[in-house]
Image 1 (tube, rainbow, N blue to C red):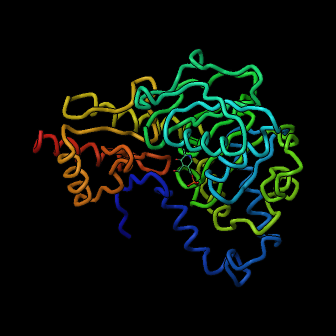
Image 2: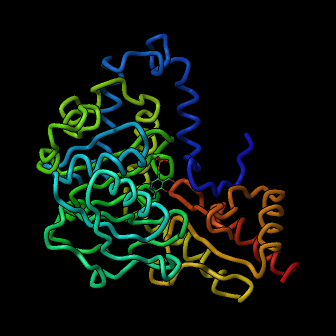
Image 3: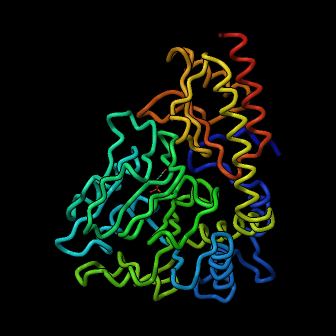
Length: 359
Ligand SMILES: Cc1ncc(COP(=O)(O)O)c(C=O)c1O
């Protein structure tokens, strides 16, 4: 088996043990003579998988019974639309914090169906940092406050989450389960699975049960959180593959020692990479120090030509996925939970060599 050093932003590296286990179970699951993917989602075997996935999420993140844990389709992007439809009642407004591409998309979508108030805008500073809680201009009557806790493209994160009177909603797609979070501080947390917890096409939603009840009667049933919560995420045929892989990934996280152990490993990987970026003027880390993401590390080289060479040479050396997002350029290394320390060390060794040859 040959495994490359994978820094893709999402879909991204999955734990190799998960892939091996999924491979071993793909044709025959247990002793039932068929794949889990060929089985009814109403079967006992699949019910056990989705129950285990939910139990794992609750155990890892400390999710209490007053929150529903949902496995939904449409990725994180559909949540951009369904959050305002469900949680912002007619005639009311919601606060959005604009930290970059993803927060901006969420706000734009919400603007289609009602009022949005931008409580902070990082655009003038090129989205180089997340705001401090005291900088937010929150409205007293907002239905909720939406943040993107980690901007995958800009490589910034909230070092500290704001305390808000209105329920706080966080898109944690690119950092879910990489840091300890007090779920009770949030009205809702959601994430596309394809970075830290599974494959694409699946969104994990953790939502306070009383909030779901706000949903106006005009919202289509499929788009209501209550519909999916009442049916155990099986109102329709769920993404069985995604839920199965998420279960395996989270099994592995629990074995690894839970979020505390993962956070420590993730912080060490990020610190090693930022340390080389800070060591020489050849590299320029894009994010302000206090907002640096530990998942998506974004930097520039002295010229675009050198950046192109860096990406091409890295690929030849077996390091892939390092091209910055097309909207911002530069270099981006996504070092999610499943990216081993060994990959980060290989990247650092490559960078030292590249600087020596091109600096
Ligand atoms: C922070 C963030 N939010 C939302 C999305 C959109 O997720 P999806 O493609 O699952 O709709 C992404 C995708 O990269 C993301 O990084």
